[in-house]
Length: 67
Image (tube, rainbow, N blue to C red; front, side, top):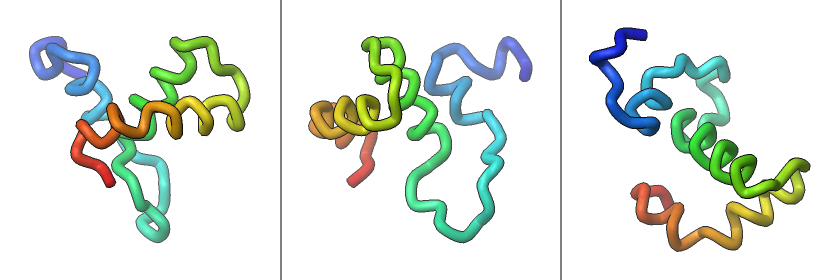
């Protein structure tokens, strides 16, 4: 990754390669990484806790343009 290419965390996440197969990709990879990062930074450590954190912050998630 070129240092000049990414000046924000979101910019850096958008250039991370998506390892998933094409089938079943409902959400952009960068968004999932951002949500996981936010949940982890908030102290959530289990998948269930992270999912609850995302649900609780749905309004903020919609600001990313995802429904």
